Image 1 (cartoon, rainbow, N blue to C red):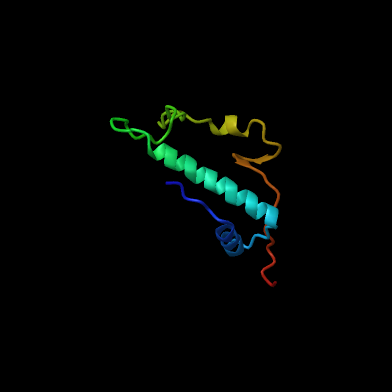
Image 2 (tube, rainbow, N blue to C red):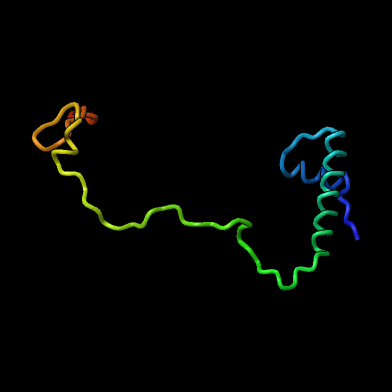
Length: 102
């Protein structure tokens, strides 16, 4: 048994969603939504006994590398290309004002 979405239902949903649909759009969506419901009903007729439920239709693999500690850069290697440095630190422009009066 096919369930139809009539134009009144489309208008009601459009009103709730604050969509301004003209009469041709209401007719079009009524037809399209009814077709979608018919298709869903057809899918419900399929015999899915013995079919394992899937979360994805394709195999999903973790693409991240294993998270394990590795040696990091030395302080000198990290500062090698720094435009400016002070001792063993990066030198960056001042972003906070020392003026505490404001």
